[in-house]
Length: 216
Image 1: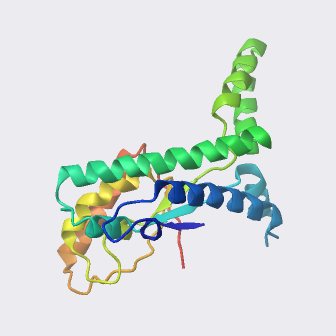
Image 2: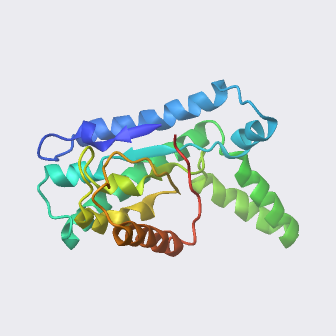
């Protein structure tokens, strides 16, 4: 699923928060519905779909919003404002996934993880605590948020390296894609290398996360 943030903001980068929230909720609901309707081509993929119910909601348009606001991509306050937005978006998505988990069921991978831990602990009391705790935090999907590092740049124009200061936004992503809608023809080798070194450093700091999604 894809959410283009620019579709929910005016020419000054001011959001219609109710419209954005409704779009986020719909993306989770529709993605969940498609899981049950999709005929997976391979047994292993079908099993993974049942086990993890992976749902990648691609959050796009970060650079476009900053440009519309005429905010400096080099200013720390700009990054903080966008991080606040990203945090709210992630919370909205996870809350909806938790709502669906309560009304239907959480992803079976959580039960498998709990069973493995209970086998190690060999304690019925610990198992009861696990089941009680998971009812409050369990989600129905894994890998909910996806971002492309290239989306920190305004789309449809040459990539201005100043916008690379927004790369910490990718900390909010459960997985990364590398879809690109901006030109880097004017970059040299050092620009390209430095950009990817910054992305790699953020990935390493983000609890060692290494999930990469290839989008074609």
